[in-house]
Length: 93
Image (cartoon, rainbow, N blue to C red):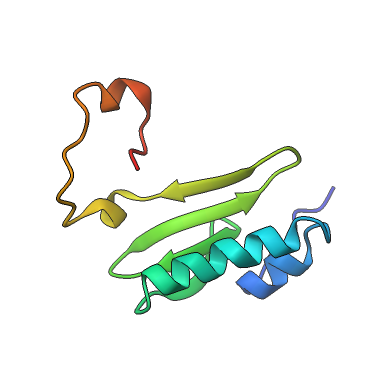
């Protein structure tokens, strides 16, 4: 099977099943609204928003949608991390 190379987030979304496309568009819109200065790109062959580094990635899979914030997306947070956050997850949201 040949790996598909996506040129844009639009290409990525169109390649997904019709039932998933509206969900991906809602995620895309929510990220764009929360980070209006961010630009869209494809990184690791999944949709990525970039703002002073990769901000967040998201992707569709057979049974779920993954949402992957990067460490740069948590800079400037005022909420404290729970003491056991490192044991629960690498990506604390």
